[in-house]
Length: 152
Image 1 (spheres, helix red, strand yellow):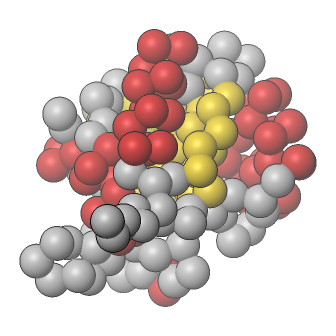
Image 2 (cartoon, rainbow, N blue to C red):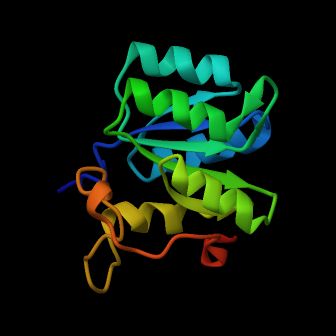
């Protein structure tokens, strides 16, 4: 029996203090083939990045020990090649603009849809073209802002 390798090979850091949501995101992304590490605070995210390299970091804005904006700024200094995606329940265009200025590739509104995020990296099943690829994210000319298509 032939097996299909569904592994993306991407190392993903999920930073969210909502333990239930973090567990769901972790499980969903693992099912899609990501190697996932979860962190529930800025401190835990910084420790995880100090210990290993990540291709992608999905960062909530409101964390118990700080804000995702400041966290992304600090983490970019440690791993500038990582693609950062901020997500929040706060539908605030100014927050989305600030996230972009600090290096986030996308700003998504909660609840996020893991399959939609996965397609940003692996591409559409129809076209095969990825919207973002960790190796080329710096050259992306895609629109930025709240992505309402990433809702469940």
